[in-house]
Structure formats: structure tokens, C-alpha cells
Length: 100
Image (cartoon, rainbow, N blue to C red):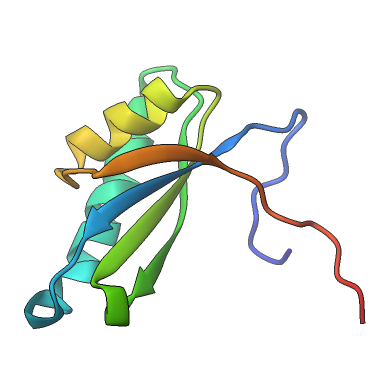
């Protein structure tokens, strides 16, 4: 995928589920910046964690933040540093091939 960081080994992805009320939709960009900054801070400290993207589901008032990290604990640390108040954190699997 364009813009993705190449890596030597495959690092698992974790989906951090958060609540984002309809009246606070403007907060998504702020939370995304915080997630990116928190992951960068942890990476500078030697942890292999990276913020990948967010997925917003306005109808359900949910926002998911995807972190690439070797463990769910590192993803949780990044989420906590970013002030995301996660509802839950789960491993995520993404398809890397497309069938047309």
C-alpha cells in the first residue's frame, strides 16, 4: 500500500475501540494526532509501536484507532498516553490481497 512503512517482520495490529459522540465529531482529528504523537513517543523510547489509522463509524458513535505493535499491552500504553479512554483493545487482521 502506498505510504505504508516497509518492515522486516510482520507486526500485529490492534484495534482500540473508543466512544465518539455525534456532538464531538470534530474531536476525531485531535484524537488521531494524539494517537500518532503517543506512538512516536513510545517508538523514540525503543518500543516497536506505530499508529496506523483511525476508522470512524458515526452511526454507532464509535471510533477505532489501529496501532501496529508486538503486544496488546504496547497498543494499550499508546492509547492511554493519547487519552483515548479505550472501551476494548483487540487484535486485528487485515487482508493484504485484493480479488477483482
